[in-house]
Each structure stands twice: as C-alpha cells, then as structure tokens.
Length: 97
Image (spheres, rainbow, N blue to C red):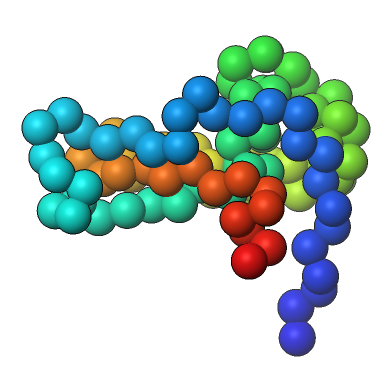
C-alpha cells in the first residue's frame, strides 16, 4: 500500500486548461494529464527561477519530492511537445474526484 499524498501548497495555475497542436481535433489526439502540483513545480523552478530547496519549502514538500514531481512534469511536457499530444491541466479539485 502506498503512502498517502502529502497536501501541497499550490499558488499558481495555468492560463488555459488544455494545450494541443493546431489543426488536429481533440478526439484525434492522445491526452496527457498534468497535475496541479506538477504545474506548480514547473512554475516555481523553471518560470520563477527558484532554487529547488526554496520551491520545495513553498510547496510544503521535501526537496527530493519536488525533484521527483519536477522530473515527471518535464517528461510529460516534452512528451506532448515532441509527440504532438494534448496537455490537459487538472486543478486540485478535479484531482480529488
């Protein structure tokens, strides 16, 4: 049995809920879901240029947890950009449903 997910502090959110390649209908695309904590890790480290330790403190997780979340988020983002998949953003409310 896996450990329960620690509550994370999420301060930012995406401008849109979906990003996809132009000219291809959504029903023809493979979808990749990005969780709100993955988006927040990218925002803090890559956009705001925070050190991982500082970003981890802001999110309320360990530095290693932040690094793991960041690695997964970067993989998902590159998978979408490289392979032409749609990136769906989930907010914290949707993730709990």
